[in-house]
Image (spheres, rainbow, N blue to C red):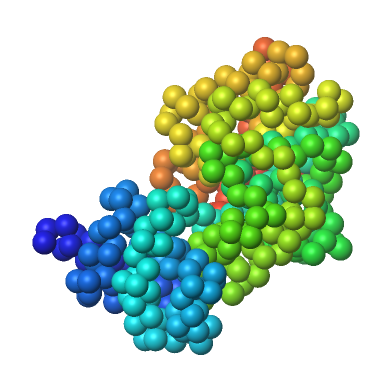
Amino acid sequence: MGRAHTLAEVYRSFGAADTAGTSPLHARIAVAVSGSDDALRAVAAVPARRRHPTVVLAALHDLALAGRAPALAAAYAAADGDAAAVAAVDTLLRSTDAVVALAVRRRTRPEETGHSPVLYPAVAEAARRVGADALGLISLGCGAGLDLDVGRVGISYSDGRTLGDPSSPVQLSASLVGARPVPARAVPAVVARVGIDRDPVDVTDADDVRWLRACLAPDQPERAARLDSELALAATDPPQLLRGGAVELLPDALARVPADALPVVTTTWALSRLPPAGRLRVLHRLQDAAADRPVAWVSAEGVGVAPEIPTLGDRRASGHSIVGLAVLDRSTLRVQALGRCWSRGRLLSWLADS
């Protein structure tokens, strides 16, 4: 009874507060689950660390997208909260084993898209500082590797400035905070794209792609459209994906970058999944690699998460992130905070000189 009561509170709070303003459908379903003893018993079949509403709701959405929960899919399409709540509870009861299997096997990935407005000027700045005409991009914690297409998208900023490819099928935007514009430099030719992740997403695999879509709420069409466009672009030239830990596989990834190209390692809200000691080991791997060639690291991480990147005096857990650049060359490490960003890159304050 105590466990059921705890789950009920978690789901009720998620529906009433956490997601009420962003996804009315998910909010309605979470509240319905919290009020159903049978539904809560089904959720309790999921291992404890995987019972969070975001995981279970993504699993239900995946079943709907796969055609295995037609009533739920119809309710989603109609944006009918009451029907979705009934159908979701029914699906949870009828397909408990399938929900458990998805929750155990998959990791939720709600924020895979839209990072290029932050990454593009930072990657271009890394190339400028080294004088590089070609780059090899390496994304740590890459997910589907969408960040590796930073040089293949078009970007517009709220001050009217545009970067990247205006003819790309992927067009992203960001609002600028403050008066300083992002620099107008272009990202050089990208000759290698390598992603590292313990559970990478293959953009050519239908099940993997469907799961990414399932991690978005069914009533967020703009985010779904952005994800679809980035996935379609990535599928035209998929990156190399390495399965495993960043510390172990980073030397292999760096070796895949041609000798005449600058390796640029990117981390976008990935280091927070590592303990502090693990973050330092990533930096040490970069320093080891820089003994033979220059290496750059572009980061968008919470304040104080990326080792050596200045925090600008900001408080940890302040609600925004620091856009950092580290250039490593032999024994030299040069670091700078290029800017701040909010909402995973939807808002950007560029601070570095242009």
